[in-house]
Image (tube, rainbow, N blue to C red; front, side, top):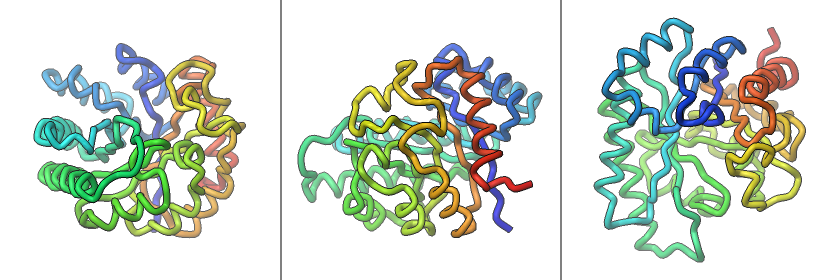
Length: 273
């Protein structure tokens, strides 16, 4: 039986707000919490503290989000090791996903050699993730790698489906002019996690995807058709995490997270009970 679990992204609480994020997200009713990968640097030497706090609230680590420059061949080994360290951290806290995305915007066409570099780095990270019982998910971003149907298909084609899965960010796909529902349906076999994030109606504004407060609309009031996305997830019998990302909303993080939680629980149709 398909099981959808709801988590929240911790970045809006800031680099020093990890503990507050855990408390606030648990109070809102979420089952899990996804962190930016910098949480590893802050807690890898006191992992037991991090685990104890999660255990106290009952929250699960749904994933870590890490930005990687997949086109930098010279630093490939360094980036693989950094990602592997994040996977080690996630594995020690009881699984979850490692989600990677391209850190630098792409400028112009990507050469065949560059695609080989991308495939090699992603697949090596995926293999290292498996060593720690972690799923690797590639997430396309607007103006970055994989921000078109053609490029996303290429990334998935050059990587092993047993090693590399797909993460969908609704906001990034809408900004790229790609239908999130279509991507979800087309690549359902590779889909591992879905990020519910909204954007304003003005596409390709750089500040829409920033962390600047007020750069994103209140959850559910922007350009993303969450009804269509939810219907598609129900249709494919999606089983996995949905992460509510309120990055850029003007409201305080806890208030925005609670509003996002209520929207998904009451209006998406994903949680009819």
